[in-house]
Image (tube, rainbow, N blue to C red; front, side, top):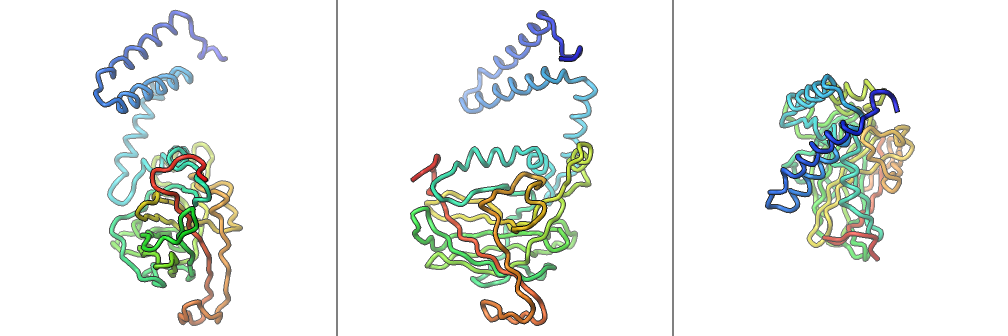
Length: 303
């Protein structure tokens, strides 16, 4: 312990008295969950302040950081989600709320670029809507943990283009590389996307400055987002990642899980597409992702 961290008995008592007073101030909360959250937050926040012996200058800098995060946040960019992601808080919350259940597909982060109101595409349709990138055929099944097909599952899919940008990051109000579709009566699904490529999270704001200050990369491993919902099933928010991507072990938001790494098979130009689509002189890739949904309101290991 350095000199700064040495605390006298009297100083310790004064600090603890303040913690106790603030915690007690939330005793009047009528909502028991709100009471639990505010009191626990108070205890842990004060424990952090006391452990590191935070200086007033450092606290002022933290306030400026959060203020800057608020200023840069708008309808298309959510800096606080980025902050949550790079601190691992998003993945920890997901782990807590999506306990392993039987063979259900694992969940991962939503990310800051989900947008409501995506266009519907038919089975076998193209969600790229002109986004730059190599065509990619995605197919699979949606089943429950009992192996039974899940027809009519709503599947929201979105991704960055080959330049590493989501449509929401452009200034022209385009809608591209996102859409939604529904699984068929036998639980199967299929659509055209673009082959995922690595890209940096937005790092021109306070979160990017934080990563630079600690020597961390803003790069995310290549991935395709899925949000899958069906009646009686637990909502699944996940990605699939490209096997062989060199960033798999250092994804900026800690989103990679081994079970979500898949083979994206390369097909040279001239190879017939699964649905007969004419791709001209373009190469393409394909991936199979079989999705298994846990029952609604389930926790624990399951069957």
